[in-house]
Amino acid sequence: MPPFRTLLALPVSVALLGLPPADSSALSAPPTDAVLPLLVTQGRAPAAALLAREGTTTRYAHAGQGIARSDHFRAGSVTKTFIATVVLQLAAEHRLSLSDTVERHLPGLVRGAGNDGRALTLRSLLTHTSGLYDYTRDTGGTTPVTPRQAVRIAVTHPPAERGRFSYSNTNYVLLGLVVEQVTGHSYATEAERRIITPLDLKGTSFPGSRSSLPSPHGRAYAADGTDVTDLDPRVAGAAGELVTTLADLDRFYSALLGGRLLPPRRLREMLDTRAAHGAYGMGLFPEKLPCGTTVWGHNGHISGSYVRTAATVDGRRVLTFRVNTDAMADPGLESAVLAAEFCPRTS
Image (cartoon, rainbow, N blue to C red):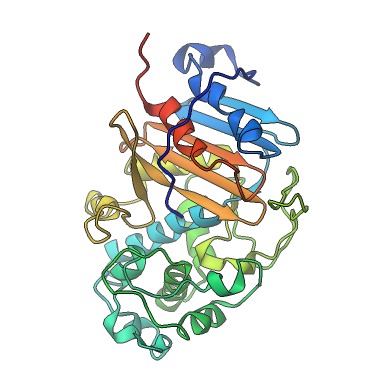
């Protein structure tokens, strides 16, 4: 989901944990770490954590109890950046074109209630401009479905205006099916081969139907406090099933924006927001902070987890933070964390 833009910042102290001596000089002065506890005190999350990376130097902080640096957690829609990267790699290999219609790869699947895959391109899926209804509005993001079941749910509803940005998980479920059709392998297999293994993302996986998290992990809570640590990832599929760690997300976004996963032309396409009228590129969205700095990344919201990664456009500086619940009482705190990390400080 797109971020809220409100800026809130209050000075609250937090201890930095596990910092080797080299870290303290390169990523010193921790206003981000002072804002982090607000995700607990104002946002009412049980716990929050962040990992900042600049080059090979990292800084970790946490607030609250029951969360650790090495924890595995569900990353929700951050999955979309991985799927978009795979699709753009296939485009670079001329195995598909972003101008291809959905019908070309998935004949007859997108039909009904005014929906027509013959009129939709892969580009429109990547940029959320297809107008397809978001199937999770019907499932609540808690009912496991197959990809084709998700699409069938979506096409019982009339589409939104085609060409207008309208965020929909259905778009990326379809892209997962396209990857499978083009390669003969699941989107998970392709992402593992193309991204996870080359970048040595040891804590990142596509769990499929496995409901438990890998060790180590903490607990995950719904907004009402219910423990939802165990969850069938098929509630999200290619739109949000990823399990990962703070360090892996920092490494992934740094590599992606640093040009290690896509050729320059395809990375420029990924960052091009014109189709979505400035709101979204392809699996990435920009956020202009109050100081004028623009960062790129994605957020992820799934039962029991909220995560946000943002980075400078060159990938040299990246921040990932997470809370172990799926709702924050004050969503505007997200912008406060990003501004504290990426906006220049004045004395």
